[in-house]
Each structure stands twice: as C-alpha cells, then as structure tokens.
Image 1 (cartoon, rainbow, N blue to C red):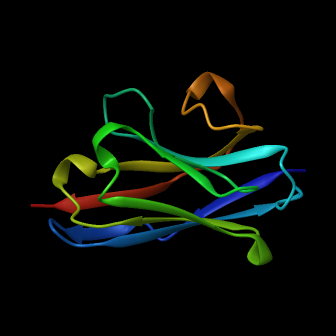
Image 2: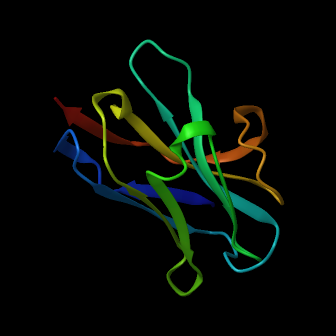
Image 3: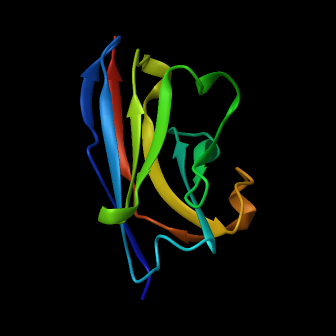
Length: 125
C-alpha cells in the first residue's frame, strides 16, 4: 500500500517560514516511475499545484510566482520530499497536500495517482 504522510504544518506570522515534509512508503522512491509534488487548497477554492520534483534527475517545477519563495527538495535515503516556504503571506493559507504522479511533473490534479491527507498551514497577518 502506498502512503504519503505530510507533516510540518502550523501557524506562522506573515513573513515567516515553514518547512513541510512528506514521508513516502510502499513505493520505490529512487526509481523513475514517479514524480512527487505539493498541491494546496484554500477555503472555498480549487486545489492548485505548488511544486513538483522528478526524483531521478531532481528536476523541479513551480507554479507561476511561487518559485523564489518556495523550494522543493527530495531525500532519497529517507524516502522524503520537503517543501521549504519562505516569506509567507496570508494568501498562502491552505491545506497542503503531498502527491505522486507517474513519471514526469505535470502540475495537474488530474494526473495524480496518490495523495496524502494534507497538513494545514495558516499564515496570520
């Protein structure tokens, strides 16, 4: 059984930083069959892509303007993907989900085959 478990969410003031982690199990993390990403969903809004990494060559992809504030990374030895979030804004408040899709990053909800249950990030002004 494939499981993705997020951790690291919480409450932070605007301008602060948080680091989210996603632990993967039941999946061979260091092969090239999957790409891993983060999505988020704010209250009343659709789920949107944040970032994605292809573990094999560590190619990274970001959604629009998030690059520069958010950094995705992988740790093959630990079977983990992280998301470092800096200069957080109240608009970043959302449930953040870890996700896996086949082979390459598409940053598309429709292509995700595995989801974590999410971790809540709240940015106060």
